[in-house]
Image 1: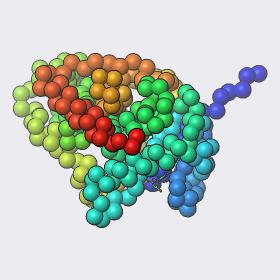
Image 2: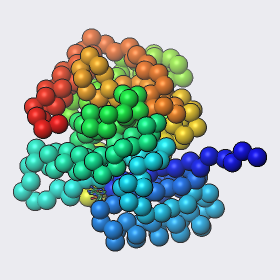
Image 3: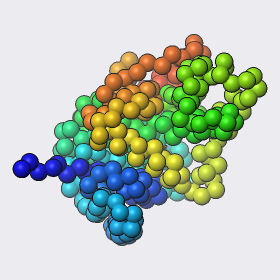
Image 4: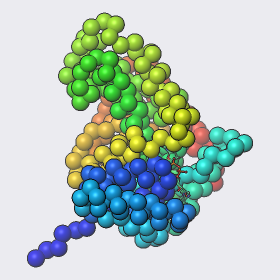
Length: 309
Ligand SMILES: NC(=O)c1ccc[n+]([C@@H]2O[C@H](COP(=O)([O-])OP(=O)(O)OC[C@H]3O[C@@H](n4cnc5c(N)ncnc54)[C@H](O)[C@@H]3O)[C@@H](O)[C@H]2O)c1
């Protein structure tokens, strides 16, 4: 009798965000084995034991273990949520360089990665680190993904749904491009029940500028209030992982490589067992496209100045 293949996901960096991703995966029984990796071994053991309790008490089939970087390198999916704490006095640029060196050391320690693994980056700045991870890992382009603007898209869709009093599942709308101040809200392609947003909702239902600003500022407010933002991203990353493991080909706004710019940023993709199963175009207005191009060129320029890659 053929033995069933054991599915596994590794999470590298099990602080607040990595822990929340793990919890969301356990509740979904997303995989057989959940392997945790952290430089801080005490913290790693604490998370593994606490999350094992969650698995036992929820009846999840997922089993949790703390492993070395090397052992964690052979999973179906490797999620990277490792980061340095932002110490007082460190500039944003210094923090970015710090997280690049963490990414380098993780990939060094884990190489060679399983050739068909899907690498999924959460650490910030997410598009830059996804681009760095792609280059360092030498995996095929389609197998390296970043959380990108998936969380921002889910949030914006939810906020519009609340105002319009319709289910968020009936709304298709996306935030795309380079995640952060330059991200693009693709209003021109937004639909409710398949009908263009402007036709579907009575005039004045939503104030687009206000809602986009509120949505963009929410991350900062969450970080100010509680120092981390684990649950939203935990939930969206668990959804990406199940789409990969089950080859579901769900269409999501996610960061992946764009050859024209030589870097990774969010566009729509069908996500399956090999990562990006298909890239989907989004009809953007001229100004939205201009904003997307500008943000991608900015990221490509930043990457070209990181000369130690
Ligand atoms: N993309 C998104 O939408 C999104 C949302 C929220 C947070 N984030 C990012 O996720 C990252 C993690 O945030 P957090 O709040 O969990 O931080 P945290 O400080 O709680 O956890 C980071 C963990 O990484 C570990 N670590 C550091 N270097 C490591 C290495 N070389 N190998 C293994 N583990 C290592 C640390 O020991 C720590 O446990 C940050 O970069 C944050 O900005 C991204």
